[in-house]
Length: 416
Ligand SMILES: Cc1cc2nc3c(=O)[nH]c(=O)nc-3n(C[C@H](O)[C@H](O)[C@H](O)COP(=O)(O)OP(=O)(O)OC[C@H]3O[C@@H](n4cnc5c(N)ncnc54)[C@H](O)[C@@H]3O)c2cc1C
Image (cartoon, rainbow, N blue to C red; front, side):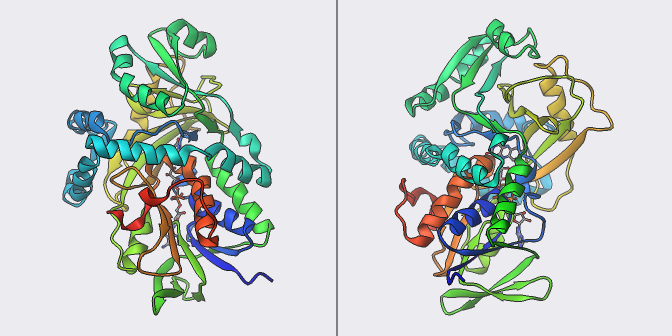
């Protein structure tokens, strides 16, 4: 039996990827989640392996748009007014990170995380027998007019400077490629190498099944508290009443991770950036790739279960009731570029998920500063599906003492 033991809190894409890579390094892994694998935020994302998204989520241009967005309660970004005082420090920190020198550093750190996204995905999904979930089709971004296209020239230049291909297509070329797209679309841009998966939930459940097949354990329970002995965490107290001993511990608890870090005396600013989706099994629209639309953050992705429209960002805390009108708004927005999109019907589903968002658009990947046997892997915001497998590999390398392919200092837990 293996004498190396690791416990991972959270069975989302980040936690399951971490478990899978640690298992490859000889660890016996136990994953604890109050939900079955892949039922948190990782369940319902847009499926984009969006590794070309290297500019931070909040950058100067987005800051300028925020006041306008906030005027519309169903707009791309909303803060419930009652929640504003709580979210304010996070937004002030995000504003500081939107300064040009920070944007440059953050972009570099995001680009570094992108280097092995596809390879790390393939490693896990090939082993799980689900590599066919990855579709190697570039995402297409759509524009209403030339002004809108030109307004993103700076971001495209940045992406190109990091080697991502950005190819402009005329409206006619866009429709030749994807006949479902309306004649009102002025032009499009291929986001080189931004692929997608056709079922994000199955990505996680298949990795989980592989981890279990190889001797891993998945425990359905809620981690209530981390118990310290000296400068290490020795036990976890679970809601069921069980108390389990831990050797190495990795916190991958998504939008709830800061609550666990706080128990170790570490304050990490994390907000639930709540996003919505609508899945239309009878969409009436056939797409061969994921599309994004410059008028609104979000994507329309053809998935196994139907067309998924996903996006929007709502700050209302972890526990507020979902506002599914936001999912309906996605339908009206995408209807503008997909004229054949059918009305939602009895088969349509709506969902809300909590993105774990840091104010600098970078995840926390690395050791705790206060507990010698604890590592963190959370805060992936809008990019957790994309960066999940790579994060799992990097954490596993840190725990086993292997050298990583990138500089990890930008993701430190004590940077805030
Ligand atoms: C609408 C939308 C669209 C998105 N589109 C994309 C996209 O196209 N591409 C992309 O890369 N990313 C996308 N994302 C972001 C991505 O989904 C998230 O970043 C990612 O799922 C986060 O994964 P995670 O493993 O950190 O968290 P989760 O999947 O939420 O997993 C964390 C788990 O921890 C468990 N947990 C928490 N606390 C405890 C505790 N105390 N005890 C036990 N269990 C606990 C939870 O139950 C949960 O299952 C999108 C998100 C949304 C909402």
